[in-house]
Length: 309
Image 1: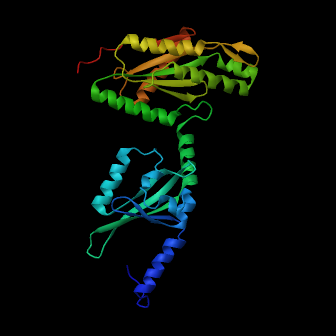
Image 2 (image 1 turned 135 degrees about the horizontal axis):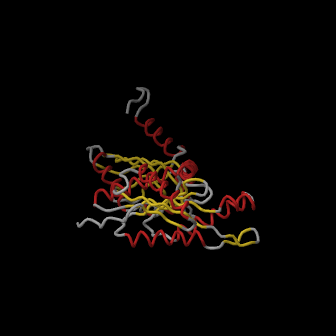
Image 3 (image 1 turned 180 degrees about the horizontal axis):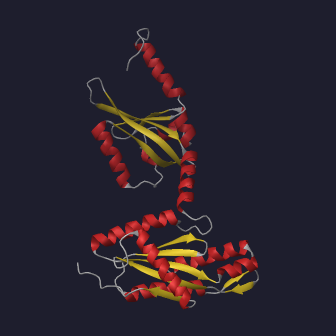
């Protein structure tokens, strides 16, 4: 590192020590075998651990459990290969609360150029990380129902189509419209209407498999992505469960209300090979179902048998 000629070795050592002690970033020095050799005051301020509580211990005492083994393998692979690593992680304070950190870990060599110890420098970015997560939540999920919104629906439907294309499988998009919702919303008010939508959304979601996705498309319209379909019976069963869930009575504003559902279904690859095509076909089928009567589903043709592996 370039330094002024006026700075001798002793002065340089004093400068380095001042950085260690006065830095607002946490600093932790460990031996090659992972024992903590030194920490600064900022380390204690961020983690809640006094120096005497961590010296001689392994940094794993800070682990939050949010990162899996693959994360740490990749981190140490980079340190062994490049001599350094930087990224973001979640660790745990002494009081049990988790904190997000931006951390840089470097290998420090000895006079012969061989690895001697590690230095980790980290900053608490919990607030920024939480704000980022909140923004991601808002951009991908519907605020009223907590379901995926159109953006996330498109992403998940695209992934389901890609998987089905790769393994020769089939995936359905089911467009769900709640019959009679507008009349109840107009009569009881928007607050009651929002409550009704939230309740119906929960029931629809519970009617599906763990592998399925239910999204709010807008207003009183929902879309279910149904991957890994083997035959018409499975599809009919899932659609029937959706219709039954939507038709169950709901206690609302000191009265019982009951909706019905019109469902239109489109299937990859029969009805299209893109999210846009499937959603358009499912929307058309839903309107055909609505014209046929309440609690009705329309599917343009039977599912083709699954191709043999």
